[in-house]
Each structure stands twice: as C-alpha cells, then as structure tokens.
Length: 492
Image 1 (cartoon, helix red, strand yellow):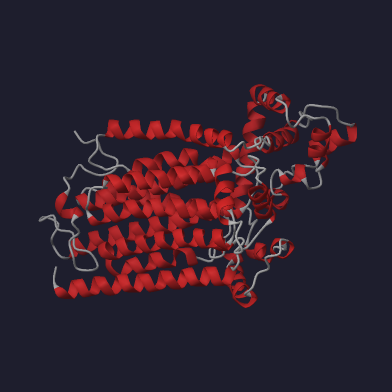
Image 2: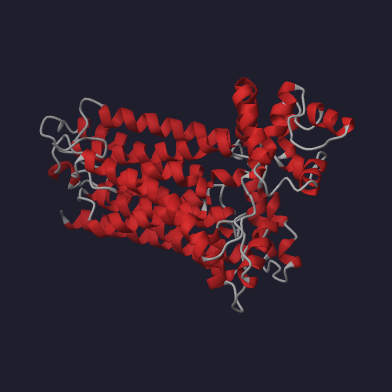
C-alpha cells in the first residue's frame, strides 16, 4: 500500500466520520426529546408502572423501563436508537470506503433518505429493531469486505444483536435465520452453519416466551388483532359473517359488505384491522369484548375452521391485504405532528428543524418513496443483482464472498416484508424501515462490486486474479480466500 492510497483511505474515513456525526446531531436535534405516538405513551406507561402486557414486546418495555425513569424522559431511547444506528452506518461506510473508495461515502446518506429520515427520531420499537440489525450487519461486513474470516467475537456479537432485534419485533423471527447465516464464517462447514441457524431459530421463541414469564408480562391476546382482521376480511369474501358470538342482522350486513371495500384505494385509509377496532366497524371489537370472547380460544377456533373450510377466501383476503400494504402511503411524515408529545408533557423543542425535515420528506410524497412496494422492488433488484455478481463466471473470491453476504442481507429483508403477507394487520410504512435501509445498502454493495469488476477488466488483470477497487488497492479478500469460499458455499 503506497502513501497516496493510505492518505486517501484516511481522508474517506474522516469524511465518513464527520458525515455520520452530523447525521446523528441532525436527527437528535430535530426530533428532541423524541417523537412520540399513542403506542409510545402506552409502552412508557407500562414501563413506568411495571404493569407490562405483551401487546408491546416485553424486551422493548424492559429497555424503556431502564431508560425512562430519569429526568431525560424519552431522550434516553432517542439517544440509544441513534447512537446504534449511526455507529452502524459509519462502520458500513468505513468498510465500504476501504473496499470501494469514494463510493463508501454514499452509505452515510442512507438514514437521510427522505423515506426514513424521520424514523430514527421516533420512540418506536421499529427504530430500535433496525438499529440493532444494522449494527449486526455492519460488524460482519467489516470483516467480509476486508477479506478477513468473520471472527468469533464478531460472530457472537452479531447473532446476539439479531436475537435482540427479534425480541423487539417478534415477526423478525423468520428473517433472522438468514441474518444468522450471514454472520457465520464462510470457512465453517455448511452443515454446521445450518445447524447453528436452526438452533437459533428454535431458541428465539423460547427466549421471548421465557422473558415474558420472568417479567410477569400479562397476556393481552395480541394475536387476536390478526384473527379479527382475517375473520372480517373472509366475511367480506364469503358475504357471510364468520365471527363467533351474537350479532344483529344490521351488524352482520355491515361486516359482509362495508368493512372491507373491494377497491384498493378505499381500503388503504382504513389501515387494516383498525377499521374493526376504531373505524366505521369499531363495533366488532366492542361486541367481541362485551361477549367476553377476546380472552378465550373461541376466536382462534372460528379462524381455523373458516380457513380450513374456505382456503380460497383466506388466500384472497391475505392477498388483498398485502397488495394494499405494498401500495398504501400510511404513516408518512404527517406523524411528526403527533399530539402525543404535548399530551405526555414532552413537547418537541425544535419546531424549525422538524418542520424542515417534514417539508423535505413530504416533498417526495408523489415519488412513490413512501410505498412499501417500491422498497420490496429495490430489495429484489439488489438480491438478484448480487446473486448474478456472485455467480458470474469471472467473479473473484472477494466479490463472491461480499456479494454472497449481500444476497443474504437482501434475502432476509425480502423475508421480513413478506411476513406481513401472513401476519400483517396494518399498512404503516414504518414497518418497512428495515427494508429501506438494507435495500439501499445492498444496492450500493452491488454497485461497488460491479465497479470493481469493470475496473479489473479495464486494467487487463482478470487473468492474474487481481481485483483493484476505486481506491486503487486489491482487497485482502481477493488475495486470500479460495474461489469456493463465500457465504453460500460448502467448505469440504
């Protein structure tokens, strides 16, 4: 490595550090003391009183209980979310800078994308979940991009962060399997890696169930929101009320014809199950509660019976929900005007900054950046692009390893959003915070690997196996690994 390359790498690293520090300061200052919603105030109330319910993840309530009972209020969680997220972003940018040169600087702007710029400022479980998983990905990417075997401490830390993210957002259970696989060293036998992934997959629900029991978390039957939504949607498909209990003819007619419109654009404002809980069909939740059906297995039995006897109606109902989820523009920046801050005694203090952020994000409302479908498409492009780069005939060992890592990240992100096709009950855009963040990261990785390959071909060094990058260096990965060693291969 010559002195010019060293100084250039240091300059890029310094630029990345300054950009991430400025991003951290901007997010914290604009959303201080933390943007709150009714969900925020509910979980804070549970954290302070010690009366926890599983409507919110007990682990998230536990973390809030450690941070909130200070004079700083929600500021503790605001700082935690952003410290982890921006540290992860710097680690990604720094590793990318060493491998791709100046392209690494673009990683610093991922959290400033208009679709998600306001999300790290919210006191939301999704904000902490994304921060934890981003940090896990960044730790592993540092080793993969530099050509090092993923160290045992890095592997253990990354898996712990992935599990922590699942404890915060339990529907991340399925996507976590691919992230755990990505965290394991490529030199480990595939059979061993798959065994570890399976063990982690089985252990995660046991961990969150055990934690709930230890903390004496009260069951709120949160899964009933899925059952209520699905029963209502299947009633609309069958034109027959399939809810258990006693219903008047007027209520049954409303359920069958008015709760779930046929038009996609008409369904979007209802926000999924909200229409049965607080919307025009709010009588559904009230009636089920009045008949004491919410804390029994009657709802689950009715759901299972209907699905078994009418699988086509169930499939249509879930497809309609997911199509609306991908198309809807709910939870756009309008939530930055949530009254929950004032009602809780923690008003937003920098109206000028947050109004500027709101104006910046809202200016993109007509560009489809607030539609989850856009980011699922970006994830798919990144996934197939990286898969092609990994399997291309002239792929160097380094490119195969890095692209393989990106394939697992993008694949996990796709699995994450697909879980909402089965378990989703609302159309909030915040649920795709992880998809936005990781799709942009994976697209940049794909661009970096493709650019390196082009530079190598232009230099006429394909035959010698060198892989110069934008910074003029040959990554250690392209010198040290055998061609068969990348995250999706079996080591014999």
